Image (tube, rainbow, N blue to C red; front, side, top):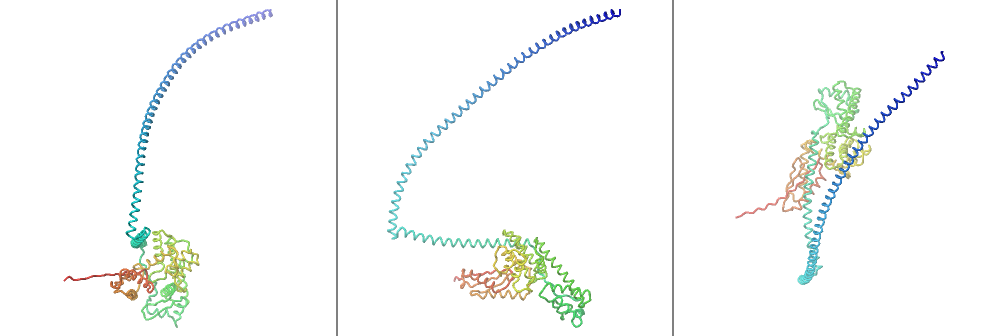
Amino acid sequence: MFTGLWFVWLLLVLVGAGGGFALGYLLKNRAIGQNVTQLQDEARALLSDAKTKTMEMELEARDRSQGILLEAENEVSRRMKEIGRQETRLQERRDNLDRRVDALEVRDNRLKEREQRLDARQVELDRAAQVQLAELERISGLSQEQAKEELLREVEAEARIDAARIIRDIEVQAHEEADERAREIVTIAIQRVATDQVAETTVSAVELPNDEMKGRIIGRGGRNIRALEGITGVDLVIDDTPDTVVLSSFDPVRREVARVALERLIMDGRIHPGRIEKMVEKAQEEIDQTIREKGEEAALDLGIHGLPPEIIRLLGRLHYRTSYGQNVLKHSTETAMLASLIAAELGADVQQAKLAGLLHDLGKAVDHEVDGPHALIGAEIAKRYGMPESIVNAIGSHHGDIEQCSIEAMLIQVADAISAGRPGARRESLESYIKRIRALEQVANSFEGVESSYAIQAGREIRIMVRPEEVDDLASVRLSRDIARKVEESLQYPGRIKVTVIRELRATEYAQ
């Protein structure tokens, strides 16, 4: 029974499965049919849209092609019109060229005819010139070559006279312009320097608090004064001058050391050989320090660097040296500034002029110890310490002891004269001034034809009046040169002296 029931259940299952399968198959076929129908509808819709877009594109393409064709036709039409205008212009140019060619042919024919007439006239003129030349030779008695030589001689003589006149005018103008330019350069240089008056003297007298101090300075048996003179190398002059001791020495540095030491001994009150020696040593150290400082200060003020220490020390020694009352170190500094300013105006080497100006009086630091002119001594010192040859030449030639080899050397001589000769630079006694003025006038009066002479402008110019019946204009020029040369040879003076010869002729007559 159980087996039959199981069989029934199996049969029912198979029947159910078969029915389900059949039902699923039917449902699937139905769904597929519906999908196919839907796809067919969509395909028809897409086909319809494609046909519509195809028609629209064809219409659009047709419109574009028609537009392009129209533009092309318009462009061709425009180009044709432009070609037509160009052809018209070319034709006009061609016509103009033809007319010009015709005109040139006419002008050429006229020129040929004129040339023929000119050739014929030239032949006639040559024939007439030959006839005239033959007639002139017959009348003058000279051949053509002789007449040409005579004419050339006359022209040459006239040309020489004109050339001499032109040369004289040029020389006068050149002298005037050169003097004006020189005055301008010197004036500019002096204005830019604008230094103080440099007339100074090193103190060589020491004031005492009382006359009793003179005895203490002399010491017992003169031991103090002998010790001081022996250590310093300076002579002490103790005379009847109240409250004053005079120091005498050719070496300005030694004199300064002695002055400082003596003043300190007087202030201290203890004066004996041992104390004198200590004070002199201290004064010597102080002066040496001052010498270095003054030399370095002078170089620094001028912007000069790298000088050897020995040169710096010699420059510092010039601080205690004077020339006609002018401090030599300040004079050297001023000369360097003047030389550099003038060099800048002339386009010369400014630094070289400045260095040579600073060192130009270097020999004065030791000229009391070495024989010879201070210019040559300074040149030898500069050469010894490796200064350039141009600097050595400028130092040695600033007083004419050797030949100058550069424009900078000439500038040093000029700047030195300006610094020494400007007003207030140096002092001189009235007696020496009068002697110099008289000597200058005597030199001028020693020449023949001189009526009188007058030294003016503190002896920097002399004016000579000459007798016009004895000295003509040309001789006046020679006389001024001869007097200037004799002044240079026979007198010593700072700066330069202007020599002016004046000739005046007066004609007087009386009407009765």
